[in-house]
Image 1 (spheres, rainbow, N blue to C red):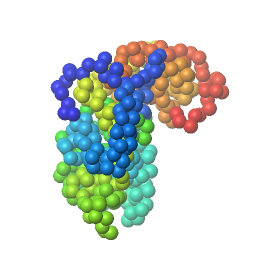
Image 2: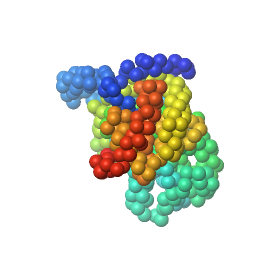
Image 3: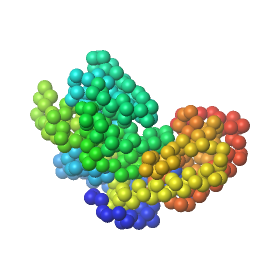
Length: 404
């Protein structure tokens, strides 16, 4: 799935790849991507022909055992990772824990894990839990995003960041931070949950040590789709995973009582791969045979710029929370309003789907694979109507749902 040259993408074809209900303006692919049209039939065929007919023999005959590597290489094409450096499986939180534990082991004399307040909370929770478990006086140092660079020094063991802020869409300069980190002897971990499939990423060219990400957002792998982990070729044969499951063993079916890590990226496997989820993700990745990440990133910048301009012209009551420069943000745009939750609930009731993040942020994700200019204009019009309705005066729009 090597990426063709820029200008290759036909966005009319990519829109046809997905099922979206008629009359719905879906701007929440930054939380959950839509269903690929061919996925139900493809999964049914896999279930019937492989699980149904081959049963346990499918692990070899259908190559279930190597699927995490094949799918990993397909994701690698989208993030600038060489073949054999990405593997898929487990959840993103597990992969964050795994990457951080391995990174800390590479810097045993240092005690600071540096991150920022824009990092995804689950990443921070996993880091806190791991550092408590290690119990060697490590500190999770959380600073504002703009202060990360100044805080990098020889006392820091690991820099752990989400490249694109899940709330505001603010984007860190990966190459710059990796360079400074390397000069200070700091190991880097990047969470690409809001990057992969949305913007151009080059983990190898920028000298990242580790990267992790989920696949249910811009990669459209479906709810609960498995996560991935990348490890740089420079360290891939020496890293030590803190989670040593049986499939990360060099010879899992020898069932040795002691652990011996597998070669290369295989050592970052943990448990039995989620075969059905992997096949769903693999089908979703077929859309990248019709598109390039460069084209998608450029089109996302155009759509988000158009949306920002339209909202600021039409809805001056709300405040832009995202960077104005498209090169400094991901593929979602956020606006602030004291009653943002009620406004978003009104939009959703009128079939414009975005989401809300505390305390006052309305998020609108633009995925050019299926979003176009019509989505921009509809969202702007409906946002103006929603504000005019003053939904915050109605109790039904104030009550927080379990999922916002």
